[in-house]
Length: 53
Image 1 (cartoon, rainbow, N blue to C red):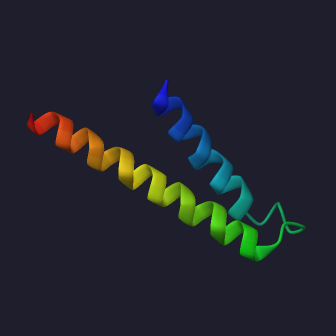
Image 2 (tube, rainbow, N blue to C red; image 1 turned 120 degrees about the vertical axis):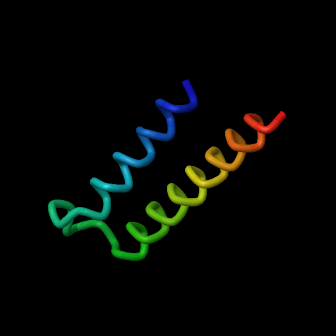
């Protein structure tokens, strides 16, 4: 289920950063994209650490 959340956040970030959404504040686009990258990185790190144990 967490993978589905990650994919949903990534898709949301892609849509928010696309040219189709010109009305959205560029600062908001940047924040959404950065938070998605950080969240994805944390989950990748957790999966790597769980794999070592």
